[in-house]
Image (cartoon, rainbow, N blue to C red):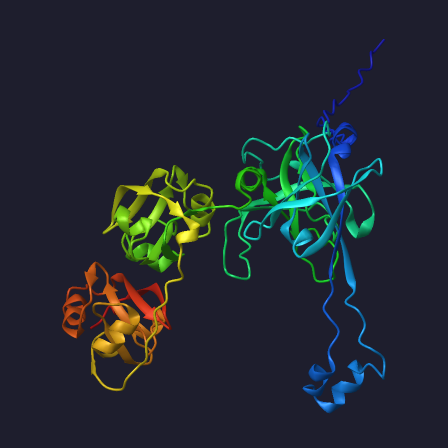
Length: 462
């Protein structure tokens, strides 16, 4: 009898492993008692007086007239935010913008206990505030000890968005070191960006990692509608710890200060300074008697590292310097004339910082050169106004020239070309003669009071 053999095909399917999503229940249960809702009262804008109404256009006056009534008393404006307890004796962290200008601050816990709070200190530069209530043995939250939070890490927020008390939202860290300059252009906070749903009322609340430690204080959102669109920003714990320790001890915050104006290094500038890629912070100006000047930092230096921290972009430098205690001496790695150097810098205090200001006016005649510049010596009065000892004034820039392509315009004052300091027109002419066709070189300018660098490429055909 013939035996029939059946052929079987073995199909091996890939093993699919489903990663478990995090369970936030224990963090919420353990941490919520230390989270608070903050109720703030502040003075609303006073009603317009009859004298103010008279200054308005007639067609607008009718919208503000009191119609024979007496001016109303100034109303109290109410606002809400979030916060959390950082020490059992009653110290609470929130945002500066939550309590700034408050006439009264009330703190409410999950069990509905309420306390009047005193504002211990405010720090607008970091948007942090420290409050104090008279109570003891309070539940507390622990700040993460460092900034080791990773992009992609799960995080959790607890707060009171739109007055909905102690709401919980979760997401991941989207980015680190985000720069969000203040209205004054100050940039001392390397924000954590997350996709956690944060809305008005979450401000000042904690952002947790999966260990239950606070990695940030929720501060800002980016929105076109007034609600969350998945772009929220938190102040990292390393900044929070520094600020609240100083507010608790002194009621104010002093930051490290270097005393330089800096700008970004683009591809052309990187090439002109001999860097392998764009990186670092280019020093465009050094303040007189500043810590930078005393350490030997010069205009045209590129700072690659400071206090052991790599400086990839200009925004990294104030983030690092601001956290250094004034009076501390640290190493700075710079590039000068294409070579790396290490300088010892004794960091100063931010209170000593002054805005450097230079300004000048243009005149009307001069001579040309192969870069397409028409220049003349800056006169004595102009140099005094600019705080310079020398320089040349750009009167005109030839269309389609190397100077025009680099972005130089009439009215700029040139103080340096490549490695050469420019005192007058002859210095510039000699510096240009030393350039090779096709070479990219940095030029330092003063424009409308601001010093900065541009990269200019010498034409291949002279």
